[in-house]
Length: 220
Length: 291
Image (cartoon, rainbow over all chains, first blue to last red; front, side):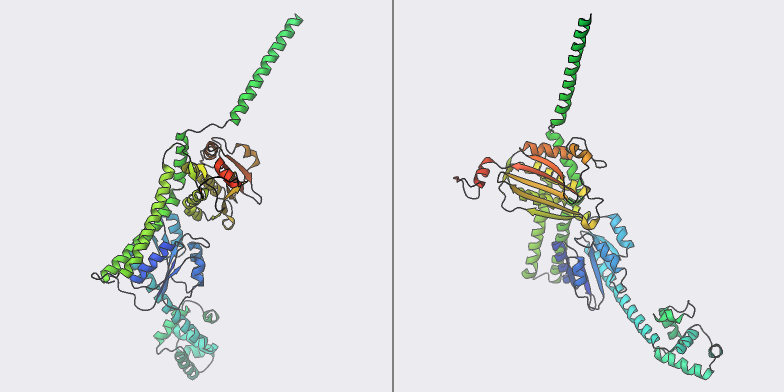
């Protein structure tokens, strides 16, 4: 196991393939290489199996009885937290590969699998999922913090991230500058940032920089 | 004069009648007689059939080969981890799986070789269910590719029939491929194909391939088994014609029906050897058990 450093931390590799020999042999290979495979013999099995909250990816066969790999891929496209998919086809089916990549597969491999390439692809996919999960968690936190702001504080939040001075905001909102300052410090506290730069970063996540003052849409 | 004329007229009339009769006889004779296909033709049709199934066969071989490669890579990883003392407990199951998958790939090759071999009809006792399962195995990947559900209903313990397995397999494959082709415009969720075997009245074995496809146009029903008649784009129109020749060479019959609820059903019936027949209807005979 020397050439392949085991992935750091908990993860899952779902192997969705109806061929018993292939699925079992790949699961065995991945366990030996220090990974945590979950064999699933159909799309239905994949959907029913437990999905722990850890970086994952799916090694997906194209043709299976019941829903096909492409159909699973299409339904995953609607899910925000879907893990990356590595497509596997039995023979070099170019139209199917193109379809799979268009449908959002991260990579496409042909059987028999080249182990180096597969392990590299799996590591990339899991790393990407780890990043995606971290980004989603951060966004959720920022969203929940933002939702705690009062309407007035939201106005000030938008003003600050657009570089407005306290004086300008006081004039526009018709409240005194002292109140603006107090609201502003509340905004910083509630958003858990210590600088305007930090606040702008959260605004970027919430995607309110380019938009108008449509604060309602932001909180959704 | 008038008498001469009448004589001539009746003579011409008779000649015309005889000619007409001849033409009718020739025409109907030609239509009724089923041209026997040469071994060459039959073999060519079989090659074409194999060609149609190439993707399916490649898939059936690639699957076990991929599994073998995975297992070999695993074994190598294990050996790299502990080169001195490779754990027999870890390697044992891997080797067993490699062996199993190797045999599985080899079986496909054997089936394929049988399909491609050129030979004259050679009768031997065969189990029709084994033959049916082997044909189904060859088209399975193709069926999956076309999103067709493949079902079999095989009557257990069928008596062996006297047949040429290669030629008969060609018939079954042909019916399966036709059935799949007929469903190209059927919506995928209701694409299914049923291969059924059964014993008829203790004296014959029947194999039916039923699909849920476009069915048989009544206008062409009578021509289905004619040479060079085809409804497929790019089809040769030899498959069913040769299938009929093969079935007839076995003393059997083949026919097509419009199936209830849509689609069509193609059935061929092969007579059981006399000895089998007697054994089936319960006449005591001094035969070895299981014969």
